Length: 319
Picture (cartoon, rainbow, N blue to C red):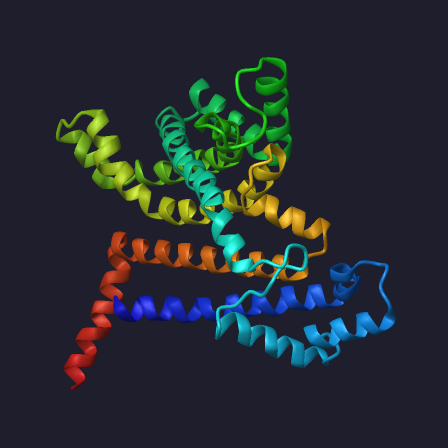
């Protein structure tokens, strides 16, 4: 199992490095002079040149890229914001807990609601329950997240006045962002659960369990669902990345001071170091989440365990 974890960890490193190179390259070739952004338009050419020299902007692309990669991955320094002159790492760590809270609650809601919908659809295949569940999932997966967030804000905040439209003053402020963000995940989880359950309930051991007189509830939840959960773990892990991206949009719509709103404000003000730092940080978080999912998947799926245990036995036999 240790070799499996190390292998997955090593595969994650080049992905994060590639993301860092790509975001730096995009920001490097984006129109706009960082020195002008910092000092403003009413400055002399000498002041601009001094600032460019101070920031290292006069260096060639490859030198700037090397300095950037060294600062991020060797010194763990994302730089300083052009706008407020604060450490980008500090600002990200201040805001990320709100983004993480929205994404985590969205994943939990997707699992709690989506799996029962998928089970009902699979058990009652081709019935009105199945058709209704899959039609609702199709509609939910077709609607953009930002549109759902806007419609919920118009209905529940402006029209009915039940929930606050913006801010983080109380727990009610997180209800609409979480629900709006989770709708797409619920649809994905329901469809995947239905597909997995339909494959499992046709297996011979399910027929045998029914023949032994076990209740249908026990057959479905103790035998069928347990085996159908293996692919659902991967779906739930991938859904976290989807929900994390959706949380960034929800924060912008509902004005929640999280990482999404921070990135949007950084883009509007052309705060290049802040954009680069936020993107790399999210790439690292998503990579760690997928690593945790792979480890959990290895513990659940006996085939992966036996594969690596078999290699260990062969290695000991060879010695």
